[in-house]
Image (cartoon, rainbow, N blue to C red; front, side, top):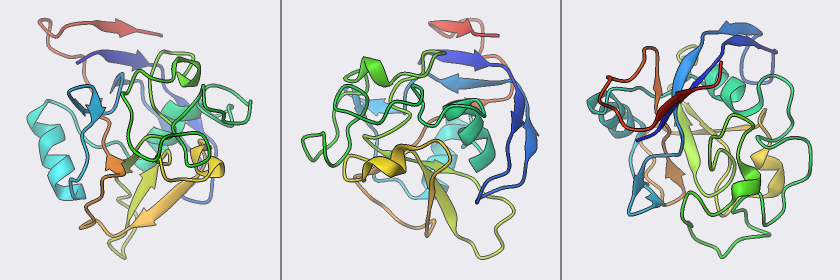
Length: 185
């Protein structure tokens, strides 16, 4: 698994969270995969358990938004409207998941793949008292506006779906034997 370190900053207030600082974190370069396709079908608790087993965790919604847009981009790649070169979305995709490296124009400036489209990504929303989880990024079945960095969708944490995956985050560097780690600070 490739890990990319993103510097911290301050994510602006949005519909889903207050303005807050975000620490420098290590992010998996892609959602978790199986044979190059996003791993899907996990409930939030299962995704969190798997993330922990792999040495990471589920990001908070604010952390995810910072990773996706750095507090300034409308979409992970910039401000251009989504097209088939950027993301696997309803209007521009085949109607199912695609390999995580299929949309190079959709990478973030720091090199993270598939942040928008292909699969929603679980995020933690510890401040929500109603037990609802937040999904980020949109999926192969989503409209283009769901690919926006600031967009989130609430979902019951027990939901399983072929359109929901996960991206890991770490507070500390990966172990020295981890392949392909790099920093963008």
